[in-house]
Length: 378
Image (cartoon, rainbow, N blue to C red; front, side, top):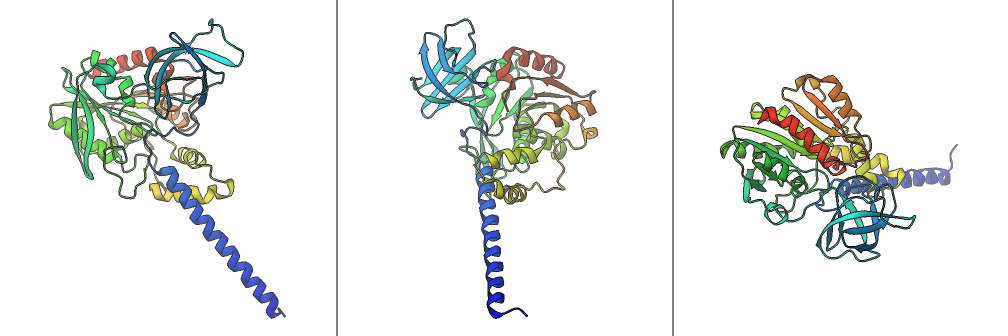
């Protein structure tokens, strides 16, 4: 027969256990909300941090790492600092622990020795006029939550490209392809959507990996058609690519979309969510609670169909830029999508490129693939 003391001890242990479980659930929810809260300009999980060793005319010396050795063109960011770097200069004199790269521009601040910078796919800051010399108009797209700021870069054709950034980016990110699109006389609408600076906040203050944000892209399609576009091409990065796929599935205006360009699309939201949650230094014991909370908060339950779950439903050509070095949005779903619809989907594999950095790793190759894709759609 259990004594009163033993019964009290058991009850106390149960209450402590229940309290600990409740605390774990609360902590998991806090970590999930932090992971899903949009923070424009915040480096993505896994963003490489580098130290500046020195600069000289047209050159910058950085700490040697896999990141600093990546091919292509990138931005270097730190508070109050932005620079643009080009390819590695292997023949330039350097120490064994350093890498010398072409320094193309320092647009803000200065790269002093010892400065810690983040390597980012966002090359340009400002707006199309200040960064690229392209005339543009600041416009407001009427969205369901309020006006959505956008840049419109006019051109002669009546097929518009609607550009949509993704995780960790802003409408400045698509400026990497604006000169190319402008040379081919394609008007560009670069959209800020819910959660971005200057745009309405999501009702719950959280991002949903495109599951609610696609409605802002739908509003941009409607705006383009109202102001002169006959057809539109959607060009999305990361969750912006997910938004493009959702718009194809759900928009009443999907028939006016003539093609889609997907860069680093988030097609496996579970892996991407795990990366976002882990990046907030969530302790391993809390990960299951945080993941369940994040899935629920983002509206992505286990039975939720990911974008492009039915490749047979695709009706327009798709150009897909992705590669095996993207750890935030794995490329296996992209490979499966391309294999399932070779009649419509072209996969352009980009190696040694991080998430959202397919153009950065090989600008010339990216633009040539884009040219081949767009010419029949113009």
